[in-house]
Image (cartoon, rainbow, N blue to C red; front, side):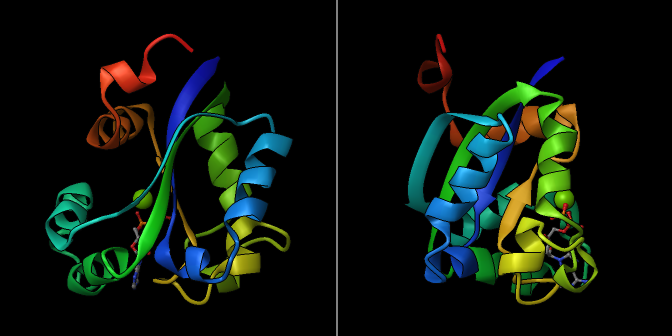
Length: 140
Ligand code: ADP
Ligand code: MG
């Protein structure tokens, strides 16, 4: 089934000059970018985006990290996009991610792990709407 998912190239991966290679990996996997923006997320926006994690011990550090530099946010569209994107990303902890996955290649540690991907259809809907308007998504 064709799905949409939200991807973020996090500040650590942007600093590593990995934007091009990461987007190449999406396209090579037939996860097509249908909306894309380079931006800087404020601390408050990061707190809103990661609200589900607000009770976690890493919340403060995570939201500070996400607001620490430029990010690239994208909507990817493709067959079974949510799960296939997660597979391409690898496990949350780069040390446990399968070899060749984006996090294995570009992640530094469990927090600075290069990329974000929605984890379910409901999450994808919330996360896409967080960054992109109906007009930007429009007819694709
Ligand atoms: P994922 O991004 O794989 O869906 P989570 O939703 O569990 O992982 O966590 C969101 C983000 O919070 C992670 O991508 C990572 O940047 C950070 N994070 C997760 N677990 C930890 C942890 N134990 N310590 C520090 N940061 C973490
Ligand atoms: Mg998650």
